[in-house]
Image (cartoon, rainbow, N blue to C red; front, side, top):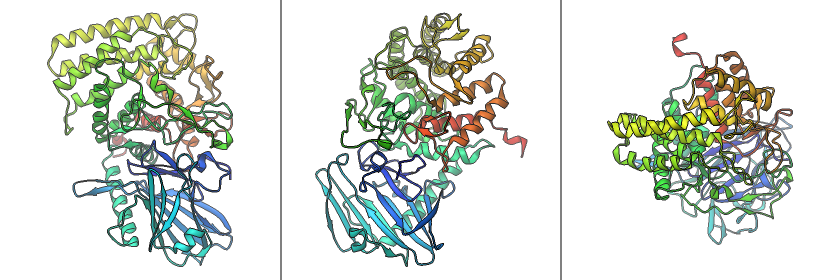
Amino acid sequence: MESTLNLGMVGNCSISALIDPTARVVWSCLPRFDGDPVFHSLLDAEDADASWAIELENMAGSRQYYEPNTAILKTELWDQDGQRILVTDFAPRFHSRGRFFRPTTLVRRVTPISGTPRIRVHIKPRFEWGKVKPEVTSGSNHIRFVADGLTLRLQTDASLTHVLTSQPFLLTRPLNFLLGPDETLQGGIDETARLFEQETCNYWRRWTQRLALPLEWQDAVIRAAITLKMSVFEDTGAIVAAMTTSIPEAPNTERNWDYRYCWLRDAFFVVRALNSLAEVGTMEDYLDFLSNAVEGSHGGHVQPLFGVGLEKDLPESLCDNLPGYRNMGPVRVGNQAHEHFQHDVYGNIVLAAAQAFHDKRLMHPSGPAEFERLEAVGMQAIKVFDKPDAGMWELRTRSRIHTSSALMCWAACDRLAKIAHTLGKPERMTFWHEKAKGMRERILRESWSEERQSFAESFGGNELDASVLLMAEVGFIDPMDPRFVSTVEALEKALCDGPFMRRYEAADDFGKPEVAFNICTFWRIDALARIGRVEEARAIFETMLQARNALGLLSEDTHAETGEMWGNYPQTYSMVGIINAAVRLSAQWDTVI
């Protein structure tokens, strides 16, 4: 069976799983997002193991959907005789005893809908990236998968013999499967699974109910928001860029990277998107993570990404025993970018923290102490503003003074001036305002290419890069400024394949990019709306909505010719784009009420 990104995601802010249209768990890392992929057939489709399947004998078709406004996934399967089953997948998440209950547990409920179908339960976790087959033991109602460092317990009211032997059997009643820690359940299996589903459903529906949605595209925004929320590792507040590693950015390119970590850049955009929907709880959790990350830098260089447990060292290695997505290796574990100097990080830190100084709703608003710590970040921005770096696209063999990095250093100083004003610190406001003013003058002068009639990707350069579109989004330039309008037009000519937009035109470590980078297309949508080309922006947005899979999720990249999704999945950057575009383009509520 060929791997696909037409996958549903379930999660609870501790763990997650990706499930294909036939109800097969093809990817799940335990005991956390960047852990061991105990189910990894997404990267090894030919191996019959490393997945968790509920197989319907003589299956003829399937339909997959989410319970509305929740992270509970439903997969309906039917056979050649019209007999049907329903598989319900979720990770429990709800309030209990004054805190969130989010165990490292996957729950699968299998229900006969019509007829007496025959099913087969195939559960074969593999540990240490597929190298270790766990020892299998069983008790009265459970199966244990045991290996050094990790033991999983499957608790079920199905026949253990049927499960252990993977033999087909008649499904005559609902069955429940709970896979998680090696601990005994407090209640009965059916009772526990039913309660977990009910409470998890109630949690997500209450969470969704509180979102301040745009009038249009509400379903798309809700699905994007829930997906972003599931990407939060709540124990520390980290937000991962994606749940997978090594899905190629384009076919057979070796552009395969491990995205199961917290990039401060991506996390800022997630926080900002959720803030726009009045979901500020994620920001408060993330600010705890961010504060710890910044404090650990002692006022100096801040690396662009961390492990979800604030790990600084994320050494990159190759996993030789897995062939990769559609046999397109390599499979990488870790990410060398943790060693990079990416100077936009300082702006991303300040921008992520800024709202907490102005927002009166927060449980823990920021004040003078937090401002003092942020000023140290701003001083670093001043120091590196005009120094070469790897840039936001993480180029491994080339260093320049990237316009996007300088832009974010300006944003750090600009927001610090505004925070100082709010805190009643006129001297600090003047200091940061003057620094921002000087940076702005240099960016406008040194990144402008007269030849291209556009802001270029680096100071003194002529090559074009979609990231300069952020100039309008972060308030650096009036979008109707002729230079910005001209930049949008130049970028469209150089980087667009129809509605889709690539990142940059220059060749990088692997040659010239061949696929569209989804967030760049969304930046284009935002820019078009700001310069008055609203109908074009709406049309491109509708195209991007069509590029999603059947469940409303996006990966990192879209192939402009085939429309196929590539890159790690689901990509938070892309889901952010859906929210931002809908909020930017939607008609107002007062037009209908």
